[in-house]
Image (cartoon, rainbow, N blue to C red; front, side, top):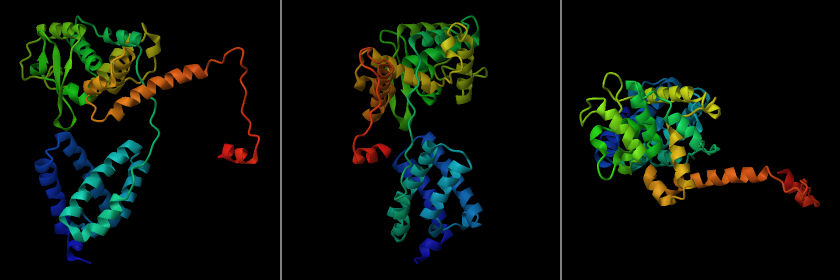
Amino acid sequence: MSPILTDPAEFSALIQHFFANRLLQQQAVSSRTVAAYRDTFRLLLGYAERKLGKPPVKLALNDFDAELILDFLEHLEAERHNTVRSRNARLAAVRAFARYVAVQCPPALLIIQRILAIPMKRFDKPLLGFLSRHEVHALLTAPDPTTWCGRRDRVLLQLLYNTGARVSELIGIRVRDLELEVTSSVRLHGKGRKQRTVPLWKETVVEIRRWLQSTSLQTEQPLLPNRWGKPMTRSNIAQRIARAVSTATPQCPSLQGRNISPHTLRHTTAMHLLQSGVDLTVIALWLGHESPVTTHSYVEADLAMKERALAAIAPPEIPRTRYRPTDALLEFLQAL
């Protein structure tokens, strides 16, 4: 066995160089990506310490094998109750490091190949949830426009629906990102340092102007601050949406018991654009999708709704019957 594989200093150096050189310098990934990868390795090293009885500084490359990674992934699901999606995200971070090690440390190739062979776990994707236009109207008008929080929350909700922004993109909007003159738009700072400009509807511009006129926000300040002038957090936004849902429910009972998140409004934006006849490529640009496959899921969701409605309606002249196999082979296939 190569001494490199048993040298803890080599393993520590590879991790540090992976973050400092590969992620930050060569790939220039966003701070959110660095944070996600960092958290993955903090969890992995902590798990390895408990499983192998070695502190992180004593771990070597030969400890970083497929068996450890598989056990770690099982630990995430069984003990930390992570979803399959979260488990796969952690595995993606480990794979990225493994590919870096394969280039930097050829003696570790066999170990790395086994790690890279660990598959992503498949999972059932739930049907995309979204709101009707009546529900959206009730939600957008729920905050009290006579209060500071109410005016801010109206802008928050209107922007989420207008732009389909991710919550991180919404939090990142600063006053300077707005263009409210001839062609009204907002610049969003998306995943992977990507930026996109989304047009603003006149209703959104009205709410933004009303909000800016009632505050003294400077161009570099967040458009949606908390009471201390700092950017709102994810939990702040979730709380304000929940409050708006609670306020709107008496006027719109269909909102009762709904778990409405910023992503629900993002799905709603996409579905309403689709139902209005907007082309999929435009929706992809609107939402900042890298792959058209992601946008196509909205088409599938819309078709699924139509199919469910059709399945519930049987033509009166055609009785509902259950198909029964008439052949041993068909019976076998039916039983699978």
